[in-house]
Length: 212
Image: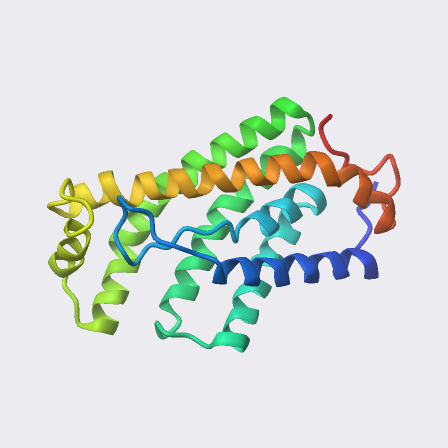
Protein backbone atom coordinates (compact mmCIF):
# COMPACT_ATOMS: atom_id res chain seq x y z
CA UNK A 1 0.00 0.00 0.00
CA UNK A 2 1.28 3.46 -0.90
CA UNK A 3 2.09 5.48 2.18
CA UNK A 4 -0.12 8.52 2.68
CA UNK A 5 1.58 11.93 2.67
CA UNK A 6 1.70 13.85 5.92
CA UNK A 7 -1.62 15.45 6.82
CA UNK A 8 -2.09 18.77 8.61
CA UNK A 9 -2.03 17.10 12.03
CA UNK A 10 1.18 15.18 11.40
CA UNK A 11 2.82 18.35 10.04
CA UNK A 12 1.70 20.16 13.18
CA UNK A 13 3.21 17.41 15.33
CA UNK A 14 6.48 17.65 13.41
CA UNK A 15 6.53 21.43 13.93
CA UNK A 16 5.83 21.05 17.66
CA UNK A 17 8.58 18.46 18.04
CA UNK A 18 11.01 20.74 16.21
CA UNK A 19 10.10 23.62 18.52
CA UNK A 20 10.57 21.38 21.56
CA UNK A 21 13.93 20.27 20.23
CA UNK A 22 15.03 23.88 19.75
CA UNK A 23 14.04 24.65 23.35
CA UNK A 24 15.89 21.58 24.65
CA UNK A 25 19.03 22.78 22.85
CA UNK A 26 19.09 25.78 25.19
CA UNK A 27 18.93 23.58 28.31
CA UNK A 28 22.44 22.24 28.46
CA UNK A 29 25.39 21.86 30.79
CA UNK A 30 28.93 20.44 30.68
CA UNK A 31 29.82 17.04 32.08
CA UNK A 32 32.71 16.95 34.58
CA UNK A 33 34.90 14.58 32.53
CA UNK A 34 34.26 16.06 29.09
CA UNK A 35 35.92 18.93 27.21
CA UNK A 36 34.23 22.24 28.10
CA UNK A 37 33.01 22.85 24.55
CA UNK A 38 30.74 19.77 24.78
CA UNK A 39 27.36 20.49 26.34
CA UNK A 40 24.96 17.78 27.53
CA UNK A 41 21.36 18.03 26.38
CA UNK A 42 18.59 15.74 25.15
CA UNK A 43 17.64 17.80 22.10
CA UNK A 44 17.69 14.68 19.92
CA UNK A 45 14.74 13.21 21.82
CA UNK A 46 12.06 14.93 19.67
CA UNK A 47 13.70 13.95 16.37
CA UNK A 48 14.10 10.35 17.55
CA UNK A 49 10.47 10.32 18.70
CA UNK A 50 9.41 11.63 15.28
CA UNK A 51 11.56 9.04 13.55
CA UNK A 52 9.95 6.22 15.53
CA UNK A 53 6.41 7.55 15.25
CA UNK A 54 6.30 8.95 11.69
CA UNK A 55 9.34 7.46 10.03
CA UNK A 56 12.98 8.40 9.27
CA UNK A 57 12.11 11.36 7.03
CA UNK A 58 10.10 13.01 9.81
CA UNK A 59 13.06 12.65 12.16
CA UNK A 60 15.35 14.42 9.70
CA UNK A 61 12.78 17.19 9.14
CA UNK A 62 12.65 17.81 12.90
CA UNK A 63 16.45 18.05 12.99
CA UNK A 64 16.61 20.58 10.16
CA UNK A 65 13.75 22.68 11.55
CA UNK A 66 15.36 22.61 15.00
CA UNK A 67 18.56 24.16 13.68
CA UNK A 68 16.69 26.70 11.57
CA UNK A 69 14.67 27.77 14.61
CA UNK A 70 17.83 28.01 16.66
CA UNK A 71 19.44 30.26 14.06
CA UNK A 72 16.35 32.45 13.76
CA UNK A 73 15.95 32.87 17.52
CA UNK A 74 19.57 32.96 18.69
CA UNK A 75 21.75 33.32 15.63
CA UNK A 76 25.09 31.55 15.53
CA UNK A 77 28.18 32.05 17.65
CA UNK A 78 30.27 29.60 15.65
CA UNK A 79 29.85 30.78 12.04
CA UNK A 80 27.42 27.86 11.55
CA UNK A 81 30.02 25.25 12.53
CA UNK A 82 28.08 24.23 15.63
CA UNK A 83 24.82 23.97 13.73
CA UNK A 84 26.40 21.89 10.96
CA UNK A 85 27.98 19.50 13.46
CA UNK A 86 24.74 19.29 15.43
CA UNK A 87 22.74 18.41 12.32
CA UNK A 88 25.25 15.77 11.20
CA UNK A 89 25.44 14.14 14.62
CA UNK A 90 21.67 14.20 15.12
CA UNK A 91 21.03 12.62 11.72
CA UNK A 92 23.62 9.90 12.35
CA UNK A 93 21.78 9.06 15.57
CA UNK A 94 18.17 9.40 14.45
CA UNK A 95 18.32 7.72 11.04
CA UNK A 96 19.79 4.33 12.08
CA UNK A 97 17.36 4.02 14.98
CA UNK A 98 14.39 5.04 12.84
CA UNK A 99 15.20 2.67 9.98
CA UNK A 100 15.73 -0.30 12.29
CA UNK A 101 12.48 0.36 14.15
CA UNK A 102 10.61 0.91 10.88
CA UNK A 103 11.17 -2.75 9.98
CA UNK A 104 11.04 -4.21 13.52
CA UNK A 105 8.14 -2.58 15.31
CA UNK A 106 8.24 -4.42 18.61
CA UNK A 107 9.99 -4.16 21.96
CA UNK A 108 13.08 -6.03 20.82
CA UNK A 109 13.26 -4.00 17.64
CA UNK A 110 13.06 -0.74 19.58
CA UNK A 111 15.79 -1.89 21.97
CA UNK A 112 18.05 -2.96 19.11
CA UNK A 113 17.38 0.33 17.32
CA UNK A 114 18.29 2.47 20.32
CA UNK A 115 21.39 0.49 21.30
CA UNK A 116 22.67 0.29 17.73
CA UNK A 117 22.11 3.99 17.07
CA UNK A 118 23.76 4.99 20.35
CA UNK A 119 26.88 2.93 19.65
CA UNK A 120 27.04 3.86 15.96
CA UNK A 121 26.61 7.59 16.54
CA UNK A 122 29.01 7.68 19.50
CA UNK A 123 31.74 6.02 17.42
CA UNK A 124 30.96 8.15 14.36
CA UNK A 125 31.42 11.33 16.38
CA UNK A 126 35.13 10.50 16.69
CA UNK A 127 35.99 10.94 12.97
CA UNK A 128 33.43 13.75 12.70
CA UNK A 129 35.27 15.76 15.34
CA UNK A 130 38.72 14.71 14.22
CA UNK A 131 38.33 15.49 10.53
CA UNK A 132 35.53 18.07 10.44
CA UNK A 133 34.75 19.63 13.81
CA UNK A 134 38.23 20.30 15.17
CA UNK A 135 39.62 21.69 11.88
CA UNK A 136 36.58 23.96 11.41
CA UNK A 137 36.73 25.26 14.98
CA UNK A 138 40.49 25.66 14.63
CA UNK A 139 40.07 27.81 11.54
CA UNK A 140 37.29 29.84 13.15
CA UNK A 141 39.02 30.54 16.47
CA UNK A 142 42.68 30.16 15.49
CA UNK A 143 43.15 27.03 17.60
CA UNK A 144 45.37 24.06 16.94
CA UNK A 145 44.41 20.52 17.93
CA UNK A 146 46.96 20.88 20.72
CA UNK A 147 45.09 23.91 22.05
CA UNK A 148 41.84 21.94 22.07
CA UNK A 149 43.54 19.04 23.89
CA UNK A 150 44.94 21.48 26.46
CA UNK A 151 41.45 22.83 27.14
CA UNK A 152 40.20 19.31 27.76
CA UNK A 153 43.18 18.38 29.96
CA UNK A 154 42.15 21.07 32.46
CA UNK A 155 38.93 19.19 33.26
CA UNK A 156 40.14 15.63 32.66
CA UNK A 157 43.80 14.81 33.38
CA UNK A 158 43.46 11.54 31.48
CA UNK A 159 43.30 13.59 28.28
CA UNK A 160 46.83 14.28 27.05
CA UNK A 161 46.63 13.78 23.29
CA UNK A 162 44.29 13.64 20.32
CA UNK A 163 43.77 9.92 20.91
CA UNK A 164 42.91 10.34 24.58
CA UNK A 165 40.52 13.24 23.96
CA UNK A 166 38.58 10.89 21.74
CA UNK A 167 38.83 7.94 24.14
CA UNK A 168 38.20 9.74 27.44
CA UNK A 169 36.28 12.78 26.24
CA UNK A 170 34.31 12.56 23.00
CA UNK A 171 33.34 8.87 23.18
CA UNK A 172 32.11 8.70 26.80
CA UNK A 173 30.35 12.06 26.48
CA UNK A 174 28.30 10.85 23.52
CA UNK A 175 27.62 7.47 25.10
CA UNK A 176 26.19 9.21 28.17
CA UNK A 177 24.23 11.78 26.16
CA UNK A 178 22.75 9.38 23.64
CA UNK A 179 21.97 6.72 26.25
CA UNK A 180 20.05 9.31 28.26
CA UNK A 181 18.24 10.46 25.10
CA UNK A 182 17.36 6.86 24.22
CA UNK A 183 15.96 6.20 27.68
CA UNK A 184 13.82 9.34 27.61
CA UNK A 185 12.54 8.48 24.13
CA UNK A 186 11.74 4.89 25.15
CA UNK A 187 9.85 6.07 28.22
CA UNK A 188 7.89 8.79 26.41
CA UNK A 189 7.16 6.79 23.28
CA UNK A 190 5.69 3.83 25.15
CA UNK A 191 3.41 6.15 27.14
CA UNK A 192 2.25 8.58 24.47
CA UNK A 193 2.60 6.90 21.06
CA UNK A 194 -0.69 5.00 21.02
CA UNK A 195 -2.56 8.00 22.45
CA UNK A 196 -1.18 10.34 19.78
CA UNK A 197 -2.04 8.10 16.86
CA UNK A 198 -5.81 8.78 16.73
CA UNK A 199 -5.27 12.47 17.56
CA UNK A 200 -3.28 13.05 14.39
CA UNK A 201 -5.60 11.01 12.21
CA UNK A 202 -3.70 7.72 11.98
CA UNK A 203 -5.70 4.50 12.09
CA UNK A 204 -5.20 1.71 14.59
CA UNK A 205 -3.71 -0.37 11.76
CA UNK A 206 -1.10 2.25 10.99
CA UNK A 207 2.51 1.14 11.08
CA UNK A 208 3.20 3.71 13.77
CA UNK A 209 1.97 1.47 16.59
CA UNK A 210 4.14 1.48 19.67
CA UNK A 211 5.65 -1.54 21.42
CA UNK A 212 3.71 -2.63 24.47
